[in-house]
Amino acid sequence: MDHPNFEPLSRAEVAAALGSLADAFSVELLPECDSTNSRLLADPPPDDGRIPVLAADRQTAGRGRRGRVWQSWPGAGLTFSLQWRFAPGGTVPPGLSLVVGLAVARTLEALGVEGVQLKWPNDVLVHGHKIAGILIELVSGRGRPSAAVIGVGINLRLPPEAAIESALGVTDLARCLDAPPAGSRLLGLVLAQLHRLLGICAEAGFEPLRGAWQQRNAFAELPVQILGEAEPLAGTCVGVDSDGALLLQTSEGLRRVLSGDVSLRLA
Image (cartoon, rainbow, N blue to C red):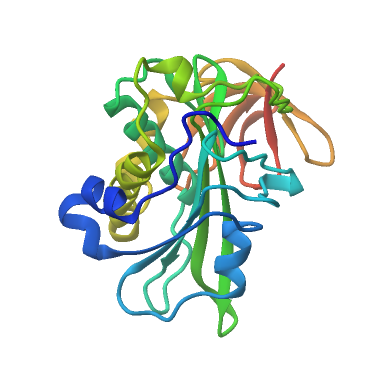
């Protein structure tokens, strides 16, 4: 069911929000698709020097990390994917999902949202409740990653009947702002932040952005448990390193957690 304030995505409004960066992106907007990530992975556009972006008013088979389903209702959220190509012969930039989360966080803060936090490795929270999620999948070329497809989902106005499983609870922009932006404007604003921060990451790695991420770390200096490993890890979250790895102070010393399949939970 469409949200009563549903406005289809508009290429002109996305371009207006992007301003001078509009020509840096090739934006395709669809009323519906299975998954924007799956579509970009299966049928990437030819490289014309622009960053390909695919957004849909509704996804019927949106995906999150570890095979979770990302639920979507028209007008309830912004769901989009972009393909970020690495430099020829380059490697996957460290801390990529953290950089994307920081871009979303800064966009929300610029709109006036208070209490924005980042949960390692790929969630954006507001006062402890999830408002956005990120899914990154690598594209291989000649035996090595050549690009990343970056999927982002942001809750705009969740319908009352929405039942979303999340250990932290969920929220949306309508609860955070008196006048939340339309999806088209939000898309343009997020893309502009991504263009800036991914550019920094490509040039200098995650280190220049690490301090900004740490300032928003939802579980800084809190006891946490890492799930998804052979055995759960318990310790105190002390932040992230220059590669984007989670740093956990345990009874056996400092541990670096690198796996993308772990979940962070309050112990």
